Length: 134
Image (tube, rainbow, N blue to C red):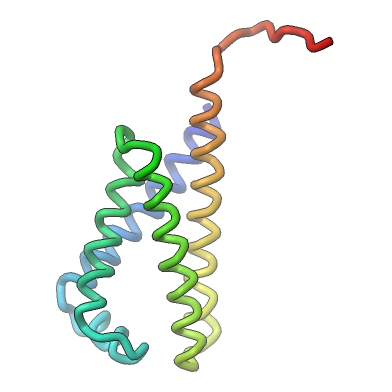
């Protein structure tokens, strides 16, 4: 039960961050527009990434999403966060901006591991007595 709570807390926080980030990208607010320009990306990439973040967050937050789609969401966010860190590094941004996506990646990877542990536990029969091997 503790694993399930930890999984949903981490995944919920991550999902909310991605929903907020994706919404901000789509809003056309000056900060993300200038941020993408600073990193050298065209404006349409901001829109594409905003939509992708929202769809990925929904895939992680909705329990009935098929396993394969959820794995793709985890993979997409991993690529996004590594690329964000590399982009900030290549643009000469301060260390904090380079490291922040990697810290968020740590949250994502922990969520992924917990998801596998929780879903494995749900698939195993709940028996108080385990058969002896031998």
